[in-house]
Image 1 (cartoon, rainbow, N blue to C red):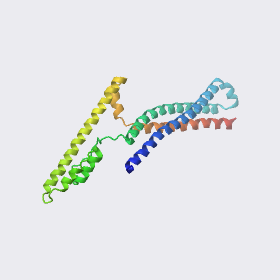
Image 2: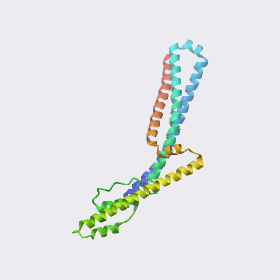
Image 3: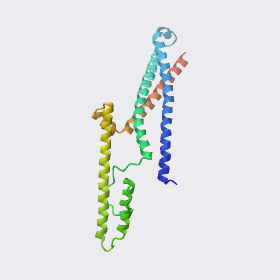
Image 4: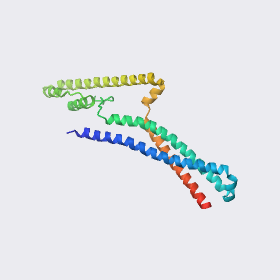
Length: 240
């Protein structure tokens, strides 16, 4: 039977994988709708421009100008939407890769270890060694327990020794992670010809904030394009 943590992690991992496909499907559906709206807007704009004089006989000058403005607005917002979707896909891939890695079965040592300087419980230090670095040092707990209670200096010595051990392992894990990142950068530079600046930005940029920005941009431009196109239909229907 799985421990609760593993069960929750596996369930979330499956949901993340499914969510990736759901997001892709929904984006495709919305994108198809936007293609139709922009296509009709371009067609309407071309029709008005090519036969402006004839339309001016049936509609007032300001109605035609308003329709032209709304069609241009719909097309522009549609283009912005497509650009936003492009960047959403780029940053979403980075976020999905991070989330899938975090919830996969591939466990990695902690690289941002906690500061245990003021920790007074040896059990907590042992727990952090187990959780952060997978080191089972429970046998030390027995040695700690058997220390003469009348000599607290011995207990403090053993506790400080555990803290130093935790700190050394933390430094090693951090260094090993940095070596792995440099190896990945070096490999990608040789394979794709990226510059050091491009690679540093790819590995350090906060994709989540940029993803949120482009999601808001896509949503806003989608609403504007749809409303502008609907407004054109309403204006022409009322004025006809």
